[in-house]
Length: 376
Image (cartoon, rainbow, N blue to C red; front, side):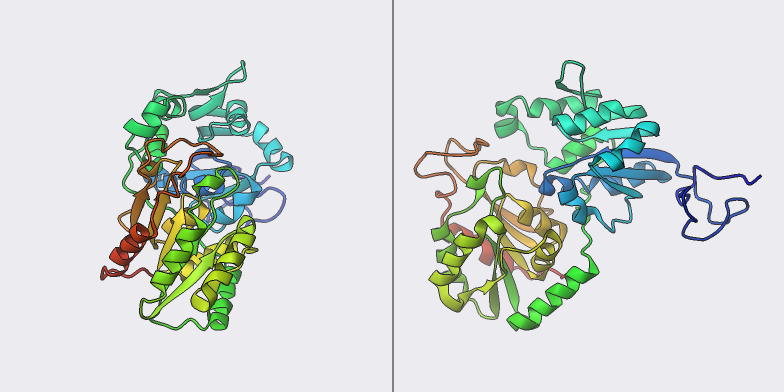
């Protein structure tokens, strides 16, 4: 009888492994080592800014096998990541087998019931982060998670006292050393090819500076978006820069808004369209040397692709975003910001208080630096 190596990272069980070998005497045998489960489901930007944890885990546990459970919408951001051994969507067919598995370490990074319930249900020697108690409430699983837990309960701490960026917070939760690890993002080949076709169609030339202008803010906090008038004024100023092209970006919610901007500014800006799947949207962001955006997925894509960024903040916390020395933060000076309110009746709003002149000044400051971004 053969000696099956069920602990090998390449063993599949229902079909031959990639090496087409039987287990006994196989030179490719590689024990999983420490089995780690990451539960970070959403939102898309939050999933991407959790990826710095991967190299940190590999430093702390060189011989390890990492499984990540995520919502289907965010799967494209984690595909092809060489540090993830197994990527699972949050659905019944994928999660049922997890109930029969056991892990050495589970990192629960969701402070919402779906993810916390999964963390509490799956067997593990050790759990860090957040779980779901029998009373239906979320609670910290280890002392190192208590600060991040309290951050969600205290506006005073979150809005005014906290100075830790999100990557540092999740490293603290995981109890591993934070070394300014960056986002990890890998664009699919077909999306790179799409961007290449876009370059030809838009007649973008080598040596031109491409500035991406992202007008959206997502579905949850729509008031994170900068103003229509601000973008129009900024476009009219930026089009005067030599050897510079402007690329208008957005999602389905911005279709009408971007149409009106295009009408207002004529041929001063290239239409990136608002119907791009996530992978293609990332490929368009990758064309840019600099991106102007609010606190939304485009910001995290730009950070992950190592672009220069001018990030605009109103109702959300600027201190939780790590720009890795490649960007500028413009934070609304209104006393009510941040607030994390989904709607606002104040006039002016915090984003209306951000002037085009201030944004232009920061764009020029970054572009006039000798350092130039690369297209990944």
